[in-house]
Length: 176
Image 1: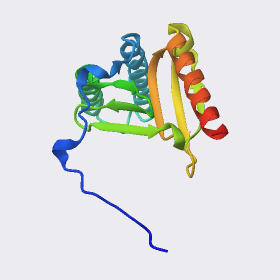
Image 2: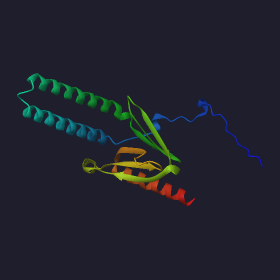
Image 3: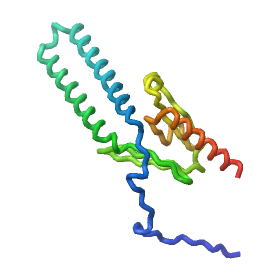
């Protein structure tokens, strides 16, 4: 008995191209949510810094307070600018056989998961997301304890539809 095995070469010119306009952008309200989280983080850092200076006020020169404030302001400004510039690069795509998510300006990341590898799907909403009617979808595959694909910043209705669609897809794959 002979096995007819083929493993043909596929040249890069013959690969399908993912076009930028094919990806669905995340909800613009998600940018506001990121800014709120960033502001909360900076506020906590400022309060911790002020608290530290009040506790050890006699041992630390006053210039150190201004240096810390300048560093925090610089970090906040950098995070604000990078978040704004990278936001248009966030998007998701659902095709016949897979789901993909892309993000990043400096560190670009594109993750694609075939439906056949999906184990389960979660819809996540935190306190701020509930207020803004946003949600995240987390897709898990076999062999890992963390999510393999996460799509944040979806309108709640869209997230529910995607979760339902993916659940139906993985259920139908199990039956076949």
